[in-house]
Length: 425
Image (cartoon, rainbow, N blue to C red; front, side):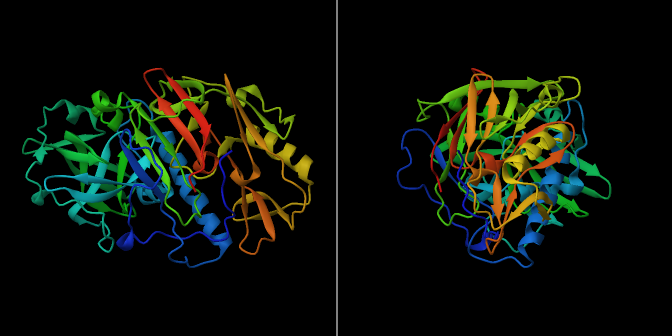
């Protein structure tokens, strides 16, 4: 369903030359932001293809730990992995903050609430990339928030100094510290006044965020709730393939210009992780064969947080071990058991000549059938083809590879998720 070009190599984005614009052919009705990926064909990474895959899987592991930490009432998050968390969010948009506006790069994050950006003078933040830092002193519309502000109680682990609200997120030997600010934010053509966001002023340890984050979660500080009068808590995106050289992905905000012919399934709220988007995945088919995933591996559990999450920041779909083994074993039955391992993937084949089966996610009221391009990666020489999924614990995560080249619509007023085919690579 979501088409991914062969992953011949993975490239890193050069922020200094990064440029975004509204792509031709995108709807003019309603605000639309161009989405690109944080890997670009402009520069070749050091290391082998296998090393790149291992790094991406390491980033995904950090992301999974972050998602697992998003439990109700918890004040600490694993900031030690913040750099990896942000890097694994491969999809970037442009936003303008302040008066006069400063253009910043922000990662699209469906599992984070508050927006935040590294601010100028940030100790420990990177200094070589353009489009990263916000300079508060250059904005005439900036406001700081007092410690008695409602938003100060909504941010994780708030701090107070000289009646200025701040936050200090720590874990292990690393920490992010900053202040909570309000300023004008412009997304595409829409100006949002008094938008609350975090200004990172200090990063210690290994947590060095390379750009900001645009939070699209369910929480009170998310874009959807701060701008609910403007966007009616509705948005959609089409993610381009990670290797595409064209920047045609898009983020559409609000109900205007959303697709009409689209299938929906229920969006679920898990009280264990209230900001994250859960869906009711009930079965997985490999080709026309039910993989016979144990129902307990897919079951929604409000106590443990079990179930299935859809997330833009995780690259490869992760299934809890019983579910992954069921899918992998059925895949091997179709493809043969002469497998090799590479880059953290345990089901790879040499010189594949047979047609790969499809993969179908079965939800209540909706089926999503993926062609092989959306769950495989190929080696740089084309000699190896790997099943691009892996096992995890706790809960399942549908990653961005499976979402590419499709319009994914979040309709929160009606508690539903829509999916329709759309090529954006």
